[in-house]
Image 1 (cartoon, one colour):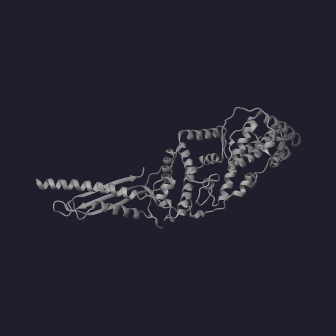
Image 2: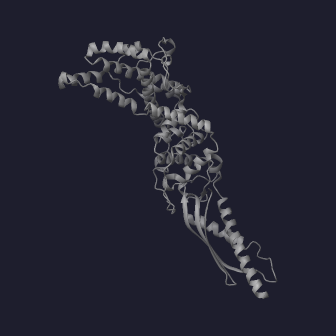
Image 3: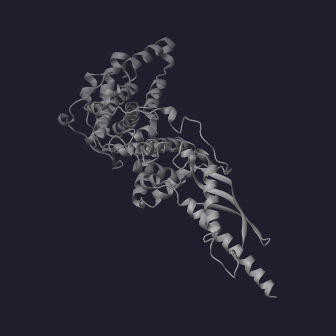
Length: 460
């Protein structure tokens, strides 16, 4: 009976030691997260390269084995009941069967942590403000292609069967001759071109373009809800620098602009973002002009004159004037945005900067005047009272982007910045980082006890 009691106690003790050793080894291994990644970007991942050039899951498996063995034999000299080791564990092993990399499923593990972090940072009022901004854009069908589509719609509306195909072609050509070409970015950005950064990166060394390591976790789930999309865009703005809020010691100065366009230079990314913002402002100003009855009346009067000279129908000519007017107005808005000012998303008549006289005098060109000298007339209409700045346009552009593109490009910037920080992180890469594993632990004792346990462990 005594031997039976001792054997039962030994078996129970072995199982307790086994479970405690598993827990301790997992906690120890997961406690070795990349500190720079947590301190600067508030995400938790184990760098399986352990600051070396070779990312290899075997390194993590070896760490788990080492911690597991240490916890099974904490004090080798201790004696219990005159026996050197009461449980006498002869063999132990850890086998890493699955691991999920930060880059798996198009970066979803990283994106989930970023979204989770931002939910604890941003309040409901700010999220409601962003949702309201997106709703206004949806209501007025505002995006980066709407302005060009509107010009195409007007061209296609010039269709009068009585004139015949020849006359119709002539009218279209006359109309096209009056339309302005898209202005150069140097002209749109004004004095901002003299403040541009000329930093660059090697795209072949980015996560987006290089061949990536893959984990062996088979779970496939990448779709994000619209609200999560908003949170991730906010994380991007919160952690990365942009033209109006540059981050010290970053590789590229316009990191958010890189996330949007993905070119290898600050200049290229900034200019494309300027083009996107210009497209937003052009359609917004076109809508603003159409909502202001006094501005529409001015455009109709000018359209009658153009119609008499070109044979373009008056209604089409009036829309041509509004298109030209909006293009000129958008240039002043983009310059204001780059200077840090806010602009109403839909303007009242009194907030329009460019006069129609300037448009008529420079029809087909770029009519930019001193907005302080322009007479403001007309009655306002009921429109959304929302003013937004440069950062808000970055939000709008990112919201419409594919989630996987944003995720990979954000990781590109974080990788470059962490490498630049030094402290052993010169070879850091996200496709060697894991935050979720599956491992099988086993032990055998000299008293014929054998325990095997499979554990799934993650930070979240």
